[in-house]
Image 1: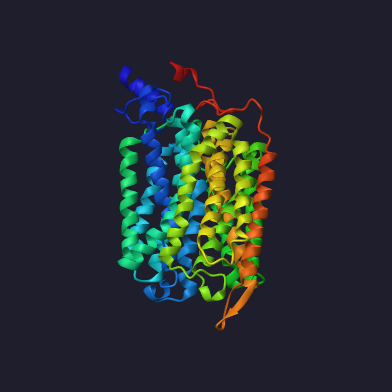
Image 2: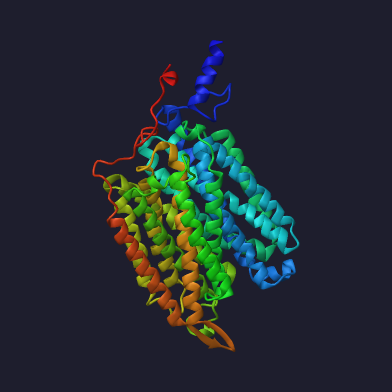
Amino acid sequence: MPHSCRAVRRARRDPEAQEGEPPVESPDSPKAEARSGGVVGILAFAGIVAALTQTLVVPLIGDLPKLLDTSASNASWVITATLLAAAVATPVAGRLGDMYGKRRMLLASLIPLVVGSIVCALSSSVIPMITGRGLQGLGMGVVPLGISLLRDVVPKEKLGSSIAIMSASMGVGGALGLPFSAAIAENTSWRVLFWVVAALALAVGTLIWFVVPVGRANTAAGNSFDLLGAAGLGVGLVCLLLGVSKGADWGWGSGTTLGLLGASVVVLLAWGWWELRTREPLVDLRVTARPQVLMTNIASILVGFSMYAQSLVVPQLLQLPEATGYGLGQSMLAMGLWMAPAGLMMMVMSPIGAKVSAARGPKVTLTIGALIISLGYGISLPMIGTDSPLGLLAVTIVANTGVGFAYGAMPALIMSAVPQSETASANSFNTLMRSIGSSVSAAVMAVVLAQMTTDFGGFALPSEDGFRVAMLIGSGVALVAAAVAFFIPVPKAAAEPEPGTAPDAAPETAEAKA
């Protein structure tokens, strides 16, 4: 009887605990501190693997219609499906992580990533490929869940640098994905790409299962899941991102595009009305309306926009023919190799950004990061039209240095302002804001480069002036992000709260204390 009572009490503290499991360690215990480096490494590896899936098919875009026996328009859904699935899955995974445990949802998010990769590897037509890519998109909640879990399992003095490293993993995975995919696609079957990702995801799941601890219990464990809110947010985001991402193909004035964008406004407004009135919302909009959280999310949209602009412009400049006068004539593999150092720079600079946050606060780090991104775009203007890729390499390194600073600061700002019970949900929503910024950036850059063209052998190519305007837009948006970050109202005495002591955290019950 005493043993069963202890098990029940432990289960109330920890929704993930099973009878026979050891009690959850404090992240500040000597044993937990000793293994925290390995935990951070595993979670960062998980983020890199998840990010690989986003750029995995880029080298195959031109060949997909032939490989899948379909049209170019249908083949473009291979990329769009991942974007839409990720947008819907990220906030849902965050909320479920708060309710049922972040480690558990990390493992659950890896399942569709593995299954989707296998489906893609076995596909010979467009429908199974789109299905597999959609399943891969469902695994994109890995990064915000990993960041949130760090708050539970990493000692407080190492939390800032750990968050920064985990945040940078998305950039590293995206940058390494291009040369990785191009090298495999050029030297072996394209199917190997997906088998490798499936194997990597399985390896990540195994490491998380055996090494990563459960984490602390959350006060959201007894709540019910807001199914209507999840459906409403999913429909609204699909309409918004579908209209934004396909608007250039369908025409921005077409009935389909305008209908989708209009529907997204109506559905998201209705979703907001529901979330404010339901007892247990998918996203607590009252928490997200707190000035620190709201302005951080606005800055996240702007940083996501400015980050993605250079990742669209620079690869095109590297690959356009030299005969244009401003293209550098690089192959897909060479382009990926020129882009890779920028992603690695994010990982290198993230601990430095964490030290700045520790000394001056994450608000300062975010402001500095946005200013560095703007500087990167600024130095690109004289580099466009030169005959060496070294100048563009410098542009990407400077810009991604700023991204490394900014991406590490945003989760720190979010987590210092939300209850422990909503850490994963708030981080996932912040990740969604960055994704929306990136999607809008892709649409804006596509419009600019499509409108400012030059004739090259009978084909319309983006002009040199078009690339300059795109870079100027990226620089301007980064400056606006810096201004928003500068005015984020962070209390002077605010510091990263101890896990479980964030504002509004539910007090421990007398029964649990017993």
